Image (cartoon, rainbow, N blue to C red; front, side, top):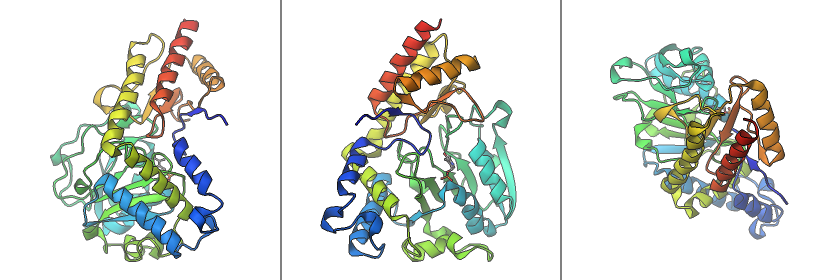
Length: 360
Ligand SMILES: *Cc1c(COP(=O)(O)O)cnc(C)c1O
């Protein structure tokens, strides 16, 4: 068996130890005689997997008791519609911050259900920064304020959360959930597709303050109403059982490594090594500067498309896979989520050094 260093933005690398454990339990889950994929979601075996996974998530993120943690399907993209369907009816309007392609998709969906006010945008500089935000920019009557905490494509992150007063803050946290501590109590809703920093695609996590349940627009399909899933303990219909099981294994792995605080330290160190190399390099440049730099997604360029293409090709041969930047921005992007070992970043930096020497 040989595993490459996989820098994919998503679905992204999973810890090898987690995959091996799943492999061991694949055919006969702990003596049940069946795989987790073949179990009733109402069986006592699955109930115990489900409860344990939920408890681990709540503990890792220190989710307060007045929040529900829901295990849904549909990806973060479904949440672009579910959030306004469930919340925009509070006042009929909502504030959004536009920091990239995913924010734009969220805005487009919200526009179908109410009045959307885009309070700030970084589109003028191809989303290479996070706009300055102050409390006075938000409409006190907005039903909620929506942000994308980490912008997967452009490699930016909110260096601090905006001051929104009493307006519920809603965050698409798909690409930095569990990468560092977030104070869940500061949010109305946190949502994330699992396939970046949690587990396999197919699972979507929604953490919602209980007060925000029960305000859905009348047109909301039952499956798109958070209340439905809160009432049924995420078992209104068949949940993504196997993905939930895998997420549970990842949560256990995170606990063994010291939890989210410990991950933040490792993640910051990994990102710093890469940015430090890029910043002193004569060949590579990172378009995002300063505190807005993501520690999860690191875009970089040489400024020469042909050289970028050669770098990506030679890197792949050397065992550094999926370094191509998003099709909308080009260049390279190294996604270094929790599961990317520090050795992977060290090895990538050494490879970049060699490439720079050989091509200058
Ligand atoms: C990947 C991603 C999405 C889209 O997620 P799906 O689960 O594919 O719908 C949305 N927002 C962010 C920030 C992402 O990184």
